[in-house]
Image (cartoon, one colour):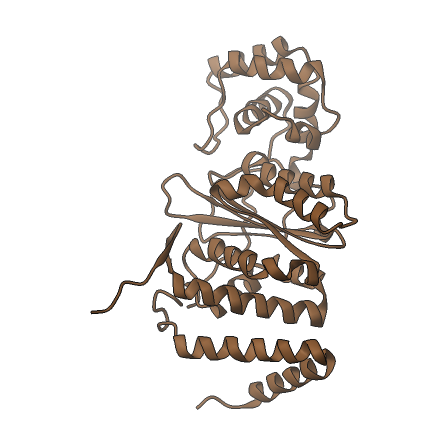
Length: 363
């Protein structure tokens, strides 16, 4: 009688334990080869590329169309690379659910235990701001539940995080890359991916510049003035057509939040966004006043630029071949073991093998 395979609970489906263990080994081997060949920073660039990330998930045997590909690939890389992080100079923090909230502590721990010369507080700040932008400044109705922060010993970083809509049928993935972020509050994403577009409040769009400036100025005004404007807007029925995910707060609630900001006013929208207690509702209320009263409208452009469609563990286009998977892992690990002795010669041989394989015509 066949024994049921152990599974890992994942959003969007279950990943068999036998597959996850192989994903850890093969994923770590692929990344190790890439670090030795191209450097750790190039791995970050690939992870920030949604098509490459999706292709990696397919190579590791996961299905393309499930939100689980994000959580599982990131989880496999984190566990598979854990014993290699110091050697490779590539670190992985965060995860799904409660693990995502431990990201700052994990970053600080890696920096301290390995004696890294990077600016740990700046890495923590980047992690928090990336999450705050996609949960608060970009209000698209997708609630973040997964946040993974990759960083190198040189201080470069990338973020792969994912949100789920309330009904749980659609997921949206957000990619960040440090070298492409000029400002956290204006067009900061390397990519945003989803097969469904919406009409969000996009306060990090370039065309939202006036709204950002106005909302920042509003919290420097006496709170009662802003609340009075909000009440007038609500009473006269002049509402913005905003997504349903976050309602505009009651005037009394907003007044308490504005009072704290007024006592220590932020100097920029980025600082406003980073303040504790400034969530989607507060920003929505400020955006409402900024547009109706001052004509500084936020953008409603959806930043989604990528959608997907290909094949894995659910049997599409075919079931995962365990024997072939194990053979691939064995070959990769043998190449790496030999490459550590004579890395240059062995990896050149691997490249020649790749070129030769590409020339073979499929039967």
